[in-house]
Image (cartoon, rainbow, N blue to C red; front, side, top):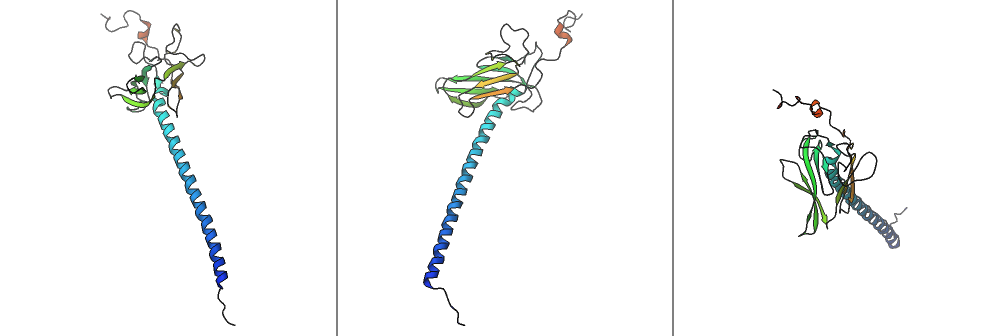
Length: 204
């Protein structure tokens, strides 16, 4: 029995089939790479958006009340707020630190800057966006949003709001709402009664 090799036609058919298979595999591999790059870019964008939001919202979620005669009493307006937080950006977590968040408009650049101050550290620019855009708002556990805290003519309002809202010009985070989970009133002290003789300076 004599050995028989491939004919030229058979070899060409095999090469054509192999070429088609290779082309399909390369195209599929290219599609996989494109999808992988797209997913990676979307994940990076999502990570950036979440990080941006967390940096801004964290100090607000850590708001705690201070004694009414202390400098850390929470005060909030449309363009700024200040108080105590146990989630500072610079100090150790869990340690009450005074901080301030403010929206400052740079007329020369036509930009609004969200600025964070935690003394004794220098201020930090957390975000910026075009135009004179942005405001803070506050809300109790129920009721409507208000532009100042404590609300005007409401003597029974807690020292810190339950919700703080930042409306910004950021495309990725136009509205951010922080839920304040800590107690909203400072523990009572005897000194808060304001009775004569309770103050060491008045004692004989």
